[in-house]
Length: 201
Ligand code: PNS
Image 1 (cartoon, rainbow, N blue to C red):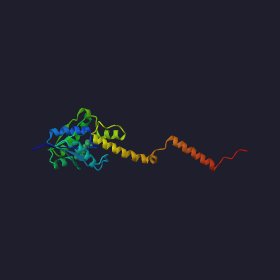
Image 2: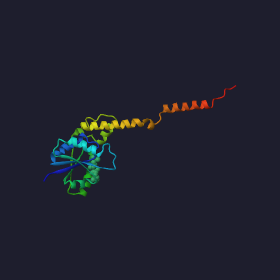
Image 3: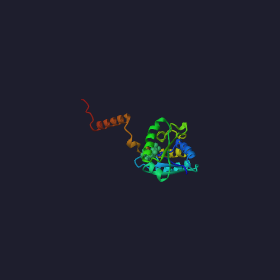
Image 4: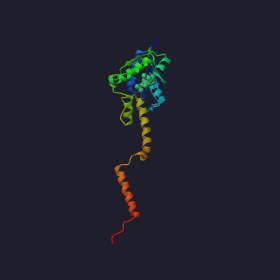
């Protein structure tokens, strides 16, 4: 029997850590499906289609890796595609509690399905999609954190976001002290013109 696994996640955006895990998973499973969760409650930076395209391009060189999307329960999706295992990455002990909870819940829901944890290379142990998004949004370099294609897509996203916020800045920017003082003195000058003080005789 072929050993088939799914690697579910948000991948917003996919990072070098994800790629490292995909490579490791592709070596121990005959078939690995990278499964992007379609979550209508989340407001992602990249659309599901954008994430799918990035992951397809990143994994094109692995013959036994494919990319798919799903919604609903991970265990239901795993059953649908006839996978026997769920692959998840654990970077540090801090990941463990959440991952254990999820794995045990998935086991409760579907006892025949195994969760397999793998560790990415130590150099990626600090890396997360959330931090990559934050660094990119604040203008930091992300080149060593994500594949080139993803870095390029992040730059494009940021350019669009900056253009948009630049256009709206004057309307939304809070008034500075200096501006407030300037406005107050202009107001006083106006009042003086309307109601000039009488000279004392
Ligand atoms: O990359 P992420 O955000 O850590 O991935 C989390 C994911 C998608 C694996 C998890 O949220 C999930 O499995 N969601 C699908 C809904 C589900 O099955 N929930 C019960 C899990 S215990």
